[in-house]
Length: 65
Image (cartoon, rainbow, N blue to C red; front, side):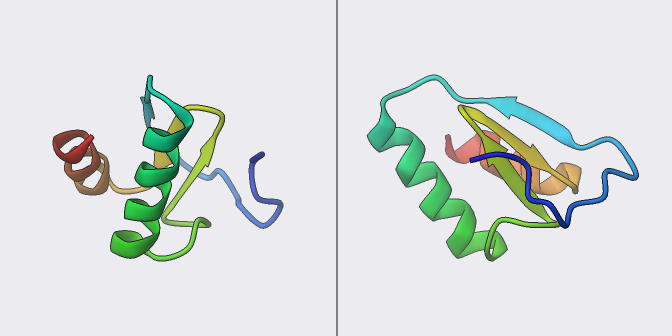
């Protein structure tokens, strides 16, 4: 997935790289969607890289994955 077209990067996002199988990545994406809503302004991802607008969201993600 590429950056959504409607995202304005007006500040720094917390970035987390995830190494793992495609199943792990799919599970991480599903978890983010369940916890934070659909990918978009609050969070989004590219190949093996997750971006979070709020630091608390990135910390929660790190604790889980």
